[in-house]
Image (tube, rainbow, N blue to C red):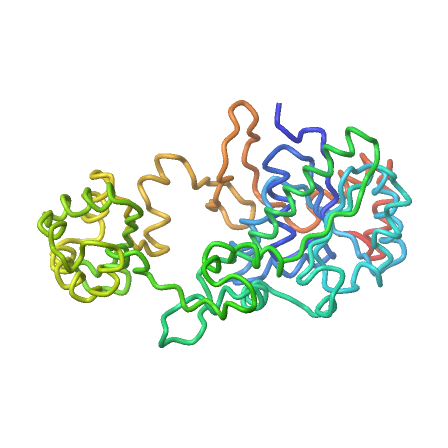
Length: 396
């Protein structure tokens, strides 16, 4: 039995943070009904390269049913209010004040269902001086100090490649919703759940800021790749922009295994590199001793040699290589669906596995694909009523 099979979620989200939350709940077995405007939510066209839904949208909205309702129409608002008592959870990540202006805030919906868990994902939360600021993924990362620690001492602050604020916040929100749902099942009462993208990203800096803790400590520098020499990035054969490996040496046993793997056990007796501080002080000399070994081999060869030697290492893999990675393929991480518009599409499956509790992977819905089915089943609307709502532009 899927873990969240009894949970029912009304999804009022868009873009990435909110859809990530509801997709994780759907992957765990929750019945998720995504509500969009008749033209679809903006994420459907985000980063699109042609007609139809974008790969971005399809990767954040699988395993959901899709209904299209005009929430600015009083008749559409009435439909949502009638649906709320039939669901356990509502999730929204609209801009500051949007759901309140629509009449869909917790003060409007919670009185309709005392068991309702109402989850709110906001850029800066619901209080504080930034509460009315609009926010997107890079803004939350910049405001939380992530950019300031990314890059080199000579570079400007840099954006990491992943959308950590969006996806990370969505996962945090899904975790919080699960906790609130457990409480709901135990007490019969709902609650409002609030998750701030800014605070999630601030949580993510706690490791790299740990040596520069508090306002009196001064800012943490750009994070060096070789903070624990001989840890660091090493250029490999080929000379391309990603022909590098990352090596992490965290203790003496790893150091010994590393020096043996690269055939430089002699460096263990070199006084210049005897201690960590010695290696930091003589970093360039140490790298000069090691870099030729890496330069003679591809990053894939280095990864295999060091990995098999018990040395923590990874090649710098580009995105094209990720999609053909043999390890991910062996674990069936990429799933292919037949899509009615795009034909075969490839998406990522959940990065977790629950023995005996996983649900089949389903494609993302088309705009309004399940509107009639859901409204008929949940509200008892017949064909004539649905036709009338469609003709009036209330549903699609």
